[in-house]
Length: 239
Image (cartoon, rainbow, N blue to C red; front, side):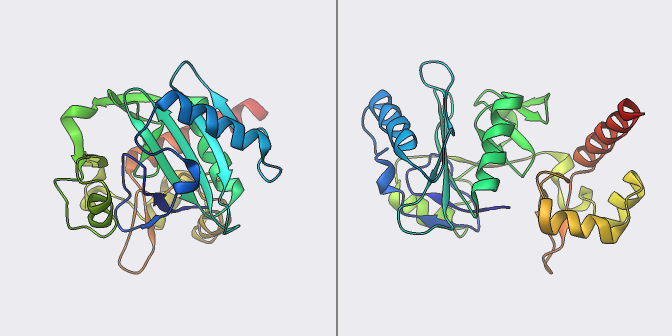
């Protein structure tokens, strides 16, 4: 379960991912309320993704839609007044459903960054915890104009500036932790953690905050510590 790309109409490109044609969404640069209404109708008319349209206030939307040409592309479309349009492309319905439900459950804003960080355009949240003002820590597309993905998006959207990351000490390369540290913090064996990542990332284990050169996942220590605490609480409640 993963984000594999982003729509060309998004306000926030994904570095190192593919920009994908999302013209069927009819977002464009026109009237936002009309675009939201069209998306809700598309969702209601779809037999492939049902019950995945949510309207939260006058300009807050969460929708999951299967792309018209490729079954492996499922679009997560979100909108809020502060963030604007977010269009992420996932590899499965389960992945995008998880993203929608996480956004609704935490209500921390529609833009997910670094796997487990969210912003509503004003504040930055890790899980349900408000940790920073986004203006103080945001990394924008004009700061990293030549990154793959960002460069293509800037050509298609020359007047836009999107948020592409967060400048937080806990997300620095030296601060991220690997399987070994996660196993120590949680008591879960490395082989089990690898199985979680392979099959249930974002569900049984938090989304990674990055990857090593060999593709191995790494996480923010704070994300893992909060996850470990939630697991402990759930275990205590079961007893």
